[in-house]
Length: 247
Image (cartoon, rainbow, N blue to C red; front, top):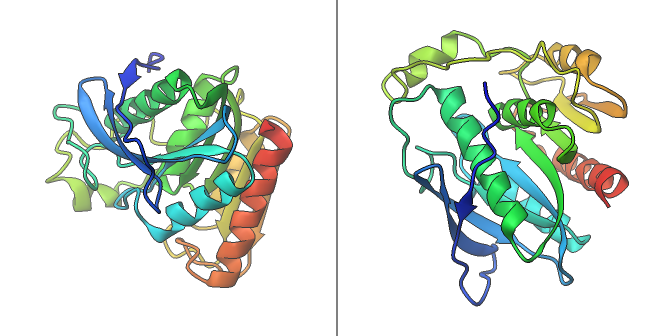
């Protein structure tokens, strides 16, 4: 796929809400609903956060990650992919193509903001992690660090049955992470009791990454890392990785 880091714009309200500043990102002809969390001092690096297949930006997990990042001095943006949450749907595109364009648009928006210092990190969960790793491999000179939770090495055909009505064009390509030789400064977080993505997917991804890289296996964590203790660990490790590699 060609590089698609696109122009994007948004209007910010004057005051943030308790869950971040609500905004709309116009990206490649589609409006994405988003929220920004800003630290006390800006400009600062921006972490762009990508949710999973059937999730949305307002999940408690994403809000907790963004709040933890802003507490240590990062800006963060969480957004609804097209067709999810409050974002408009793209038509005529496969799932992967549509979401890669959404992520590219969110990154382009982040780079244009006065509260961005030009450094970009990516955080993603499940399919959002898959997409973040693709973006990091595509633009290694731009993406300073990546944290991926529960990302699949390969997207299985069984998922198409659930989404055929929403994405009649299918998943599109790529459907695996075989080609990651340019992506580095990556932390992989994976539950070993993940019922959706077997933990060995993380090992397959890890082997293809450049150094520095790290895989953190959470022994009894599920796909969404719902256990509070494991989630706290995952968030702490996420923050520490970005502090080490992006600040």
